[in-house]
Length: 363
Image (tube, helix red, strand yellow):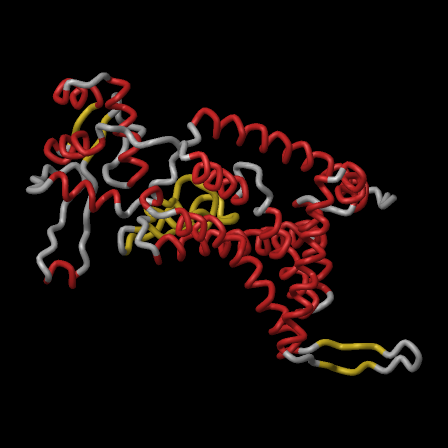
């Protein structure tokens, strides 16, 4: 029973914190008018949900964490054929890659690149598992009742449509993409996830220490007294802990402190074990644990290594300075190296946690 509770608490804590992390990205993107096609509770996969405002909200088959599919974040430059390819697919309703290439007089590769980019933009619908060929469709559009009253038109998936102003329509689609934003807005979207984790932790510190309060035991008399502190003191405590986590993360990049930093860290297994232990100690202690994990999640995501948010921000800075796009091949290479590093750290920490929590060897 304890093992089940540990797994359950671990899923609740990590799932919730990753979900609000992605919520930060979603809210920032929508605030800047960027299209978000999906906002899901859980890992990518089969899902159920509803669509509102062009975004599908729902739950996936593995409800651990969450993700927001923000359009226009694909690496590399823009295909020069996007406008013509988009008009072609909308005019046809349903079009295979070869048909688009033949009609527009471009190569299959050029057609494929443009079609895939438009799919990432949410401007067209990509191939399904049932399609034998690379088949693309005009997207489904379901305006709200108010939008219909204002003259908006509903379209089914794959329905042909006539666009009176292809250039203007394409520009309106591009304006809804992450890549169309200036550098500072793209940076806000990337950093919004970690910032939400940190702000949530500080807010939790205020609730726990200034509203709920905590018990303090007098070491000499054994007397227990209930105390609260001012919101300012709670905020100071929160930022003090954030500073401690930043120092610990910086220690990963110092050969002299790397070993100690890793030995004092824990894996998902350790988080699950500690989640139950803190939950057994009461609401305040469990809340403190959630706040600490939220801080760790936020700071770790700021490490400048893809595929973390810090890595994406570093790429944005590089592109801003160099005026060059980082190619998909380069991004995949950096992401692979980053993932290998994190997998290595994970294996070390999971071994530590097995020694700690199963065999009781904390040394």
